[in-house]
Image (spheres, rainbow, N blue to C red):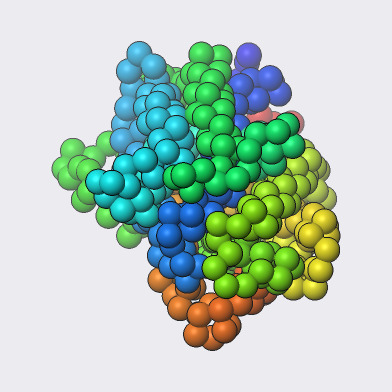
Amino acid sequence: MSSNTVITSPGTAVSSKPRLSIGQIFTMSFGFLGIQFGFALQNGNTSRILRSFGADVDQLPLFWIVAPLVGMIVQPIIGHYSDKTWNRLGRRKPYFLAGALLSSAALVFLPNSGGLAGIIPALWIGAGMVMIMDASFNIAMEPFRALVADNLPETQRTLGFSIQTFLIGLGAVAGSALPDILAGLGVSLTAGADGIADNIKYSFYIGAVVFMAAILVTIFFSAEYPPAEYERYHGKVERKEKGSGLSEILSDFRHMPKTMRQLGLVQFFSWFALFSMWVFTTDAVATHVYGLSGDYSKTVAYNEAGNKVGTSFAVYNFVAMLYALLLPAVARKFGRKLTHAISLIAGGIGLISIYFVRDPSMLNLSMVGVGLAWASILAMPYVILSGSIPAGKLGIYMGIFNFFITLPQIVNGLFGGWIVTNLYGGQPIYAIVLAGFFMICAAISVLFVHDSGAMEIKQANALKPSVV
């Protein structure tokens, strides 16, 4: 494919990146289907697995803190080194493969970790496996955001992240619904001797296979620009002779772009809300909708509530999958920031509406709004951010950006359980309502973000006739 020469800054001429076909963008991001399949299993079932191992509902956020803590550490490191890597597999692909192998192993082991209860308490083994699983997911996931920005011109990045979000939604729909599907096919949903039902175990085994297969599609059927060609499209990449590793990561953190700092507040509100939803929805539905009380964590009714929540999570992921395909058109009409704000408001209304649900099937309607927000959260912040990141820093800054995802989850994990117990009288439904209001706060915050990439697209379109 031919490319054009453009001026990116005074005295700096680079070639514009060739536009990629839909098929090329699709295979480039296909591994995200497997990653989100695994995340969906984790998000929809970790709370009930830990509850089966003996965790109290107010302890759940503390165990869930493990995941964002690991992400906060792993993602900047992986981003930093993937920026500097080039070998026979490529720049980002070695991390895809390593993460896939580790993640698949963790998916198989987590639902069976209760088998080691004679050596170590099952609850701690389960929490440890959640940590290992999340570290593995992060190794595989972090470079995908950078790969889209590496390979696509600014004018295709909304499309690229939207297709990525579509694949995320597809994987999440399947992963969220799988335990309920297996139960409908006759696989037992009664907890076994280790506290875990067969439909959950088999779902995780299938997830391990899907995760690995999807990553391999990206590895075998997508391309990366080698270093010389990368600089042709991105300009000369600065390589510091002094300082490396942690010191360079800290330096990049101090000099993060203005847009990233502004998006940090948006991400804080958004991911605080999402963390509450993932941690508390099962118990909120069990108590507020099903009317369960007392020690209900090992009852069939609790598993039914968990399956219903898993199905409703599949609904929000299905909505996100479809809405992702519309995001480029919506963003062209309303702009990136307003598109994200409208989507977040829809998510806030959806979460707040769960308080008024009495029929479990009505959860699916609440999740329509959440699906709109989820699609936008997975795409629009990265589209807005990517245009402000300097050449050669895509991996590290995508990793640092993860701080604004993990920090709110850690804050929620530290205080969320205490708030539910001491302020909400043990009623987790109020944590879901607060999550809805936080989504609306995120919508307001995004309106104040500086979107430099949007201005670049306008300038590029204005200069099109004179580009040579």
